[in-house]
Length: 498
Image (cartoon, rainbow, N blue to C red):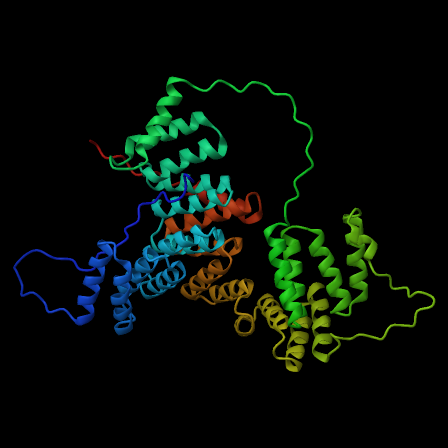
């Protein structure tokens, strides 16, 4: 059984009504939907989720804006073994009450159950923004990273949780498990478990196992392993391509199939900036040759591929521009040869050369020919921003998003422009949407941190600067995040006197 299966204590049935004190008042008459809601909670407490579902569905039909009903509906669906419906209900509850972190945490737990780490990350990051610097949520974020195989990030989240509350038992426990099972550092694991034992509740079901581990280690520390002869060399285990490569190939496939060759080009180039890979380089070369009618670019990209990956069997398949002596000249293929796309290519050339004013005019001309050219709208936004024309940039990014709502970089750039126009509230909302789509967007985390710091919300600024530091390390943004965190060190609150 995984030690990280569920280390947080969840309240399955949520309180609905609260009583006050003072002068007795006449008992209020409840509405029918309130009666159903109270009865549904009672059914959940008795372990009868199917019966509760009938009542909760009726309540939601009558008052669809009741966040508590939606949240309990999610609890009932989950208890009845319907996780997809539970996730939908939790998401609706989170949308109805934008200050409550619980539905996001409950939905994240479902994503963790199916090992959708990216989905869980996004939900917990939203929850963390609602309940600033919460040790409970930071611990859950660490659990996600541990189970996803990122020990360094998991350890950083557990450390952050303990900075927020050095007595938080769940963070102490999980940090110790990480040392024991992840780092194989038994000395640090025992120290962490001892700290956990000092603060754990007496009814914590993990106490017995932890005490047994600590006692066994202290009474008989394990002897160092005997040296063993070297095992015969095994062939290296081939791992799949990195995640950014898989994602870029899938997105470029979809874009090419839909004729959006400009989108495919942007996707592949951005992926190559994240890390070179032969599959990306080959796909880019084929895009230039087969779809963009840019033979010189294709030839140069194929040449780069052959130089970088000489052992790749695809080197033998690199096409030659020289036709065989007996072959008839091939028919000209011009799938990209339209006025709009010719203008697009000229605009990209001017853009690459730094002539943003010229590029801006050419992008506009291309869009007059084809108003649905996503890449031209996106790049128009970039050059308009460079030229200081923020109104045009805003219009361009908003139009690009209408064409490709899933494109996180367009959302991010719209947030940048809106911020420059002075609307930090909208910029923050847009950046939240970016992180829902792409949690590891370093620049979005960085700009959010800057906006929160500017607004005096230092806890949220710290959280996002820590994300930047974990994701960017020694990069430009990581170094700036490190400087801010060093200058704004968080001191733990004083311990209460017993």
